[in-house]
Length: 149
Picture 1 (cartoon, rainbow, N blue to C red):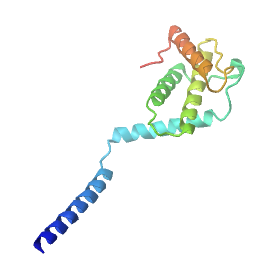
Picture 2 (picture 1 turned 180 degrees about the horizontal axis):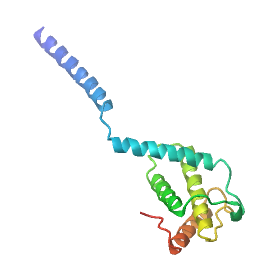
Picture 3 (picture 1 turned 90 degrees about the vertical axis):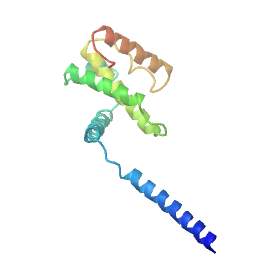
Picture 4 (picture 1 turned 90 degrees about the horizontal axis):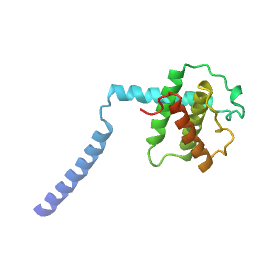
C-alpha cells in the first residue's frame, strides 16, 4: 500500500512539474529592443504590403521615386534579411509577399540610380527572375549602392 502511494505521489509530482515548466516557458520576459524591432518590422511589412497591391509597372519611367535613396537601400537590406530568415513552416503567401516587396524596392532602387531593369518583364517566379535579381543587385552594387550589410 505504501509503495502505491509513493508511486502515485511521484506521478502527480512529475505531472505538476511538466505543467509548471510549460507555464514558465510562456511567461518569459522579452527584451524591449527586440519587441520594438518586431513592431517596426510588422509596420514596415504592412507598408510594403500596401505598396505591392499593384503589379510592377512594365515601364520603369512610370515608377515615381519619392523616397530618399538611403531609405530605399535600408529597405532593400531589411527585406533581404527577412527573406534569409523566414522561419520554416511559413506560408507560401508570406514568401510571395516578401519576394514581391523585395522586387518592388529593387525596381525602385534601379530606377533611382538609372540602372536598366528587366524585372517586370520576367515571369512572376522562376529561374529567369532570380537571375535578373542577381544581375540587378550586381548592377546596383557597381553603381555604388550598398545592398548587403
